[in-house]
Amino acid sequence: MIRELKKNIYAVGVQDWDRRLFDELIPLPHGTSYNSYLIKGSQKTALVDSVDPAKYDELLANLAEHDVKNIDYLVCNHAEQDHSGSIGFLTEKFPQAVVVTNEKCQGFLMDLLRIPVGRFRAVKDGETLSLGDKTVEFILAPWVHWPETMFSYLREDQILFSGDFLGSHLATTDIFACNDTVLEGAKRYYAEIMMPFRPSIVKHLQKLDTMDIELIAPTHGPVYKKPFYIVDAYKDWSSENARNEVVIPWVSMHGSTEAMVKHLTEALVKKGIAVKPFNLTKTDIGELATSLVDAATVILATSTALVGPHPQGLYAAALVGALRPKTKFLGIIGSYGWGSKAVETIKSLLANLKAEVLEPVYIKGAPRKEDFEALDKLADAIFEKHKSLGLL
Ligand code: FEO
Image (cartoon, rainbow, N blue to C red):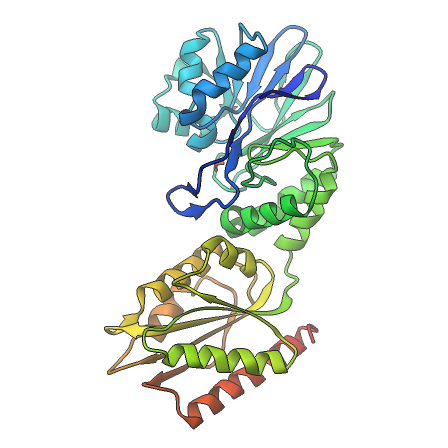
């Protein structure tokens, strides 16, 4: 399926309707797409990014449908294989094609795909590539996801090919979709993929403000006809502005931790604080990640298995620590049988967050009256902390 973005510029990528897991880690409830863009200049033809190698034949079919007999440049904005994975095949199909990317990305492609050095042209930040009547400018964007990521900007048509940045895991036939489903998908994508890199993202969003952009064409999901629809959303997500929300990932082996979560949830709700509890044995990890984007407070709630956190609690703590949300306050609650190092272990996994750790409520056995009172005190503390941020 080929879609025209503008005259002589086409989306030739592939929808992956059935894919349900990315990197063997990230659930994909709506599939995904691998967007690849063909630019036909008056003198040269470029393909910006390719597709997952499993979909190479579909990319070839799309190119054949458009009667593409020659590609001069294979532009690579990002080395991850869902976009770069077909470049090796394309260099064989189009022996004269030059792989155009930055030096760091070139190194990755040589390592990951064993593309020989002679096939590359390495570009620097701000360098341009002429296709005749069209000019591609390269904008290095390190750590907007990976260390080698970059954007390509088609000057005459004011199209920003943003790589994974600003994208969404969403398979759709509507190339210019612009609706709540796209925004939800983009937020989930931001949470799962981009959130760990907030400082770099803020910097690059500022750069976009200085550019004239008519279309943003990412490597996953629809193209944005209203660029600031997604840019403004990213500015909000990546800002320090937190919401009056508490996220509680929890796991309970025999009901004690669950009873604590229920009690704390009710106490917080009574105080006007929104709560999102996630039972880790059933939850969609993407939904949990999305909820972390805005919440002011995260409470990790876990039973002890042997002497450490239950593996699901361990996973949730590792996930929160890795995603580095804007969380301002952290709490740990739960229960143990004969002994526990769960609090220390969870604290260490969350040490890189710039969040204040509240007094844990970690108890032996089933919760008693005084334990529920301790949870009420924790709810009071969260209320006061949210109030201090002006969230209440
Ligand atoms: Fe869509 Fe980072 O790959």
